[in-house]
Amino acid sequence: MEATVGPITREAIPEDSTWDLDGLYPDDAAWKAELASLEAEVARYETYRGTLADSAASLAACLTFDMNVSRTLDRLYTYAHLKNDEDKTVTFHQGNYERISRLATRLAQASSFIRSEVMAIAEERMQSFLDDEALEFFRLYLERMLRYRRHTLSAPEEALLAASSEVGRAPRDAFDMLDNADLKLGSVDDSSGRRVDITHGNFQSLLQSYDRELRRGVFHKFYSAYGDHRYTYASLLASSIKKDKFFATSRRYPSVRDQALFSENIPAAVYDNLIAAVHANLAPLHRYYDLRKRLLGLDDLHVYDLSVPLVEDFHWRMEYPDAVERILQALSPLGADYAAILKSGLLEGRWVDRYEVKGKRSGAYSSGCYDSNPFILMNYLDDNINSVYTLAHEAGHSMHSYFSRKTQPYLYSDYTIFVAEVASTFNEVLLTRSLLADDIDRETKIYLLCREIDNFRGTLYRQTQFAEFEHLIYQAAESGVPLTVDTFTEMYRELLERYFGGGVKLDECLSLECFRIPHFYFSFYVYKYATGLSAAYALTERVLGGGASELADYLNFLKSGGSKYPLDLLKDAGVDMTSPSPVATALARFSELVDQLEALTVGS
Image 1 (cartoon, rainbow, N blue to C red):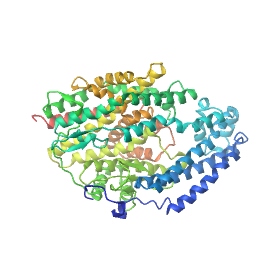
Image 2 (cartoon, rainbow, N blue to C red):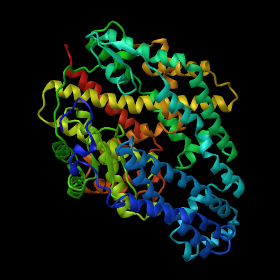
Image 3 (tube, rainbow, N blue to C red):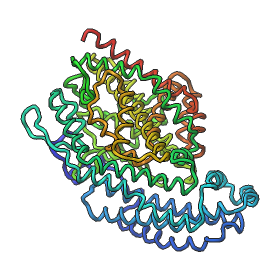
Image 4 (cartoon, rainbow, N blue to C red):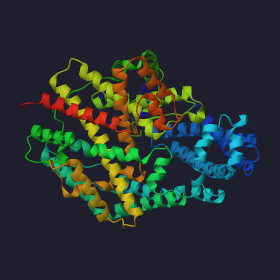
């Protein structure tokens, strides 16, 4: 599809370019009927309350009911959020999304007694339950739940915490409204004298301009808006941290980080080793900054100079069907079965809602549920190579979900966030290697190298910097340090100086960047981007350098869902994330990429 001046309407898009949701519900009426049926089930939870300790059979009956409710809720939610994202201006779908979200909260409250009652069963009696044939299917599920025994409260307290979850979202919701609706980022004159409004969507694009005065003006104007609201942003971030402290303390965790790592059984050493490994390998990153400064012909390098493409006027055109074929070619090391399933889904299977239309949600994601195909939301552009990479990335998520759901039962089909980025990054790595192996010109090779280098920079280095900042600010809060504007910006400034080194001149306003990162409202999440990328690179090296056994290990990882803890799943695939080796492998690859770029640009 050609790039257009403005988005067209959904009705103008060919049906085979949209996703097919009929496998979920044939129409909105069918969705509404199942919603009503599930709403009637809420009251049935009360019939199980107080019975879970009676026998293994009683416990199994309750867990089976709860599992079936969750499966139906997933199906309803998936349809509602996909329809809502097709056109965010349709109030009918907005209303349905609100209905299912409210029902999810009601079900969480109604079922909140389950965990408390399970925890209250005496250990000896629970062990006899676990050995009973009636609970064989739920054994792993219960063992994972029982890990939380000391962190689970009484039934009334659990219900209260469940009910308070909406209130707990207040800092994040307020941040979203301030950052996306109320914040005025200002405007600048571009190189042709045209007045351009700065938005979150075009900020990075404007920083790619070859007009340095424009870049400088955009950068300072953008951060001046955050400077004008810095006290509000600091208050919101502090409130979010205090909220996390409240929930962690209520559940008797030593710290918020301990709570965040506990759910996936991740040792703190994995987090700390990541930061230590990156600290020890900042030299290649600083070397890249020096190389960029030389190639741009600058006396000093600022952060607003880091997004300028080193290849000017890079041209790319690839229509969606051709992109699918090119991705399949790149992923050929994963075998014919993988390729056949993916090709079917991306083309005739209608997994993908391909193009931008009026009102459609921006960005891209992979979604779906146990009872559906994977679904990919895209805003594909034929003239943007990033669209091809995005499709490969989301296809990785979708194939991970596809294999997990086909292989595992519903209860164990979901994989955790810790491993969620592995398959998607793996696909991107294979795509870059395949493109670089083509007979391509020097400029295209430089462009691809820079793209992978900048992906490393944004995912491994930058997300580790964010992870370190999170650890520092939560440590400060838990030590009683006041969370003020100065606390946040001074800590952030120290990290900027470490990660950028002496080769980048840091403008004072960059310290305000800590207030614009939405991930900080999802505590201790960002480190998983860095560990996921590291695992993906380690697995890529293992699969490409191995044989049938190494490939089978990786494909079995994709099929494993949540049947084990994430570190165990990765270990079975051949990567031990408790060791520094995977991060070191990824960082070594980064250094190689900088070497290749340097060799290609000697004399430039």
